Every structure is written in structure tokens, then in C-alpha cells.
Length: 331
Image 1 (cartoon, rainbow, N blue to C red):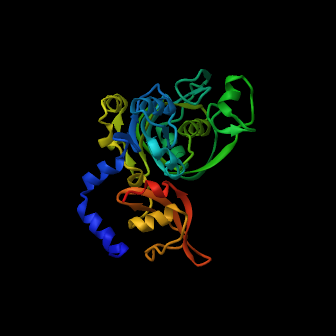
Image 2: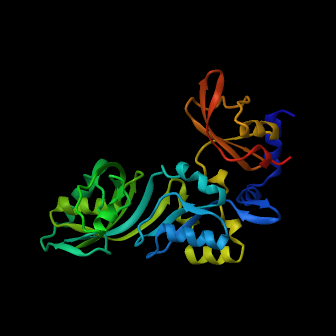
Image 3: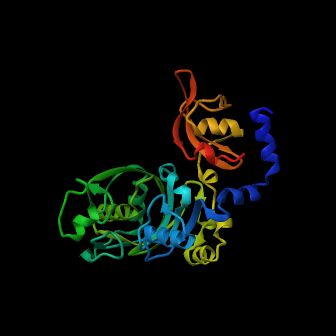
């Protein structure tokens, strides 16, 4: 049987629901271990790392995440469990959508409601002026990175300088504001929805609006509702995720490593999968992909490797990352 025939046969045997379940759980010595991506609705007051560690402990597996969300904020974070922690570099480049609230006339040390008030102004802009300012911030915008952030300067994170009371020149970052809509205005507050590129601090955006308005501002609420194709509607609240994890029932809610990736899939035969795992260059059917396209290869629902199509020295692809050893590919 040719690779293409085998792949088609396997695909017909698996329903999407069963496939999603099997991909999220692999068997090692008779014990089910979770390997996959959990879409979590993070509660306010907890850091992303804290939530990931708690879930990892409950699941008895390694845990990480693909992008942080401020502790005071709520909403969607991608928690990586088991072998899926290796996917972090491939799940961090998505644009994101947020909803939130800005308070005009008050500037804080952190740019959000958790900081100390450092400046107040009673001379507020009108609703029309705020709408004009917000409308001018679409496209490429340069924002100052907040002092309380994990961005490094000279090898040290900015929040450590801030906590030590050391003043440093804050770096600036150019980001893309795809959409920025005002949903409701009750001065001195207004609510918004924003879609932004990777690396955008919404706190910095709120402060930018306050600076342009001449009155200062800070973020009072923030909720992340989308990361790439992942949406908050499919995320689990933290307390439910913990209940399922502690009872051993979380596996049915976890995306497999392969299903979480935003790249095209090429299914392999067992022999071809083993060749890939050995670092060899078998012939793959990737004619439908353009040079430079990233794709992943799988066998029997298991993620084998992430590759890039590139004709070089007689080969049709190059390796980005291999996830399995040859002896881990079942017969």
C-alpha cells in the first residue's frame, strides 16, 4: 500500500471526536499521561505560571504555557502539558483579541489597577476627543514597554528594576493594532475591544491613550478572548480544569499537540515516520505547499516532526524539530 492510500484508510477509520481524544492521551506502562494543549480561562489574581504549575501538579506531568497574561487580567491562556511543552515556540506568534476598561485621569505605577496612583488630572477630554484619539491608533504603533513587565534590559527583567526602585530607560516596541473599538463610554471610563499583534501590552496602549489625551490613564479591566484560532468560548475555567485534573478526567478536554498546531498536516506510513525520526529525508507528498511553508508530519495520530518545505541539496524539506525517537513509533 502506498503512503497516500494508507493515510486515507487511517483517516476514514477515525472520527474527529475519537481522534481528538486519542491524540490527547498516550499510554506508557499502562498509565494514561496527558500530552496536549489545554485552553484555560485564567482567573484574576493568579499568574499564568502559577496556573500552569498547579495543573501540572494535578496531572502529574510537566507543564508550561505559550504566552503570559497579567495576574489581574482574566481570559484565555494556552497551557502546555506533557510533551506539548515542546510546542511553545510554535504557539506564541498569534495575534490576540482583548476586551477591557480604561480609566482616564488617573495614572498608576504599573499602568493597571494594581499599581500606586502617581498622577491625577481632573481636566478630561470629551467622548468625541477620545474616539478621535482611539481611531488614530490603528496600524503600526510604537508603545513604551511597561516598567512592570518581564522584558529584559541588560539581562535583567524590567519588573526587578522597578521593584528595587531603580529607574531605567524603558525600551519601545512597534506593534500592530488591527482593530481598536470603543464599546461603551461613561467618562471617566470607557470600554473597548482590541485585536493586536504578539508582544502588545494593553497596559501600554491605555497609557498611550492617556498621554495623547493629556490626562493620563490606566487599565482597570482586561480579558483575553482570542489567541489565533483559539477562543475563550472553548476554554475551561480554572476550578473546573482542576476538578477534572484531580479526578483523572482532563484528557478529554485537551487538544493533542498536532491539533493545536497552526500548520498543514502530512500523514505518514510507519516506515516513513521512522525515517523522519532518524533524521533522514524520505520522499514526501508536499507538492501542494509553497517553498518556505512550515508543516507537520504525523503517524497514527502521533506528532512526529515539524518541517519546512525547502528544496536544498536534492531534498524537499528541512527539519525544524523532531518530537519522537524511532522506537517510540508503534508497529
